[in-house]
View: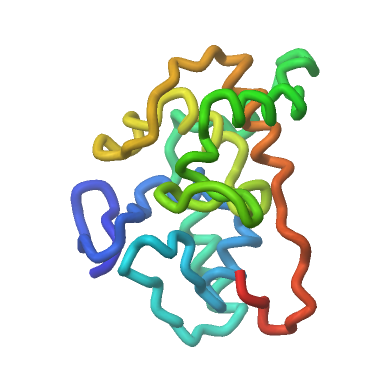
Amino acid sequence: SCHRVGEEGGDISTAALTFEGSKVQRDWLIDYLVLPYSLRPILEERMPVLRISREEATQLADALESFYRDPRIPEDPFAGRPGSDADVAEGQRLYGTLGCRGCHIIGSSGGYYGPPLTDSGKRLKPGWTYAWLKGPQNWRSDVRCPNYGLTDTDALRLTAYLSTLRSAPSSDVAGGAR
């Protein structure tokens, strides 16, 4: 009743599950299902705490991984590419040059309009990040993220950078304030 899958489902959440299995990392999804938190503080809707066990969360994550996939999203966008396409430093430079920081927060700086990218390496699959960067409106027609017309190489470099981003582990057993 909250999420859409294709043309079916509710509209409470802005996050469709249509290709969730191609989008998020399985381990991150399990942790999130056990203890959800606000991914985008600017939005009013929140994922409710489902009160499910880790085993139930694992089963649900495995189902999403199996059934909610999109064949247009590459498993490994770096496969068969030269190492220079995965240039993290160049990806970080592109992040700054393109002005991504205006909408996205990394650590404690940046904008709040887009989803935070502090944990993008832990949360998002590289194939999804690459596919999104190549054409955000292909995945959400109403998204404000600009289509920069990135070359394959620039999209891969930006993907490589975003894939390195992971917040420091929390000492809080319950998962900490994310």
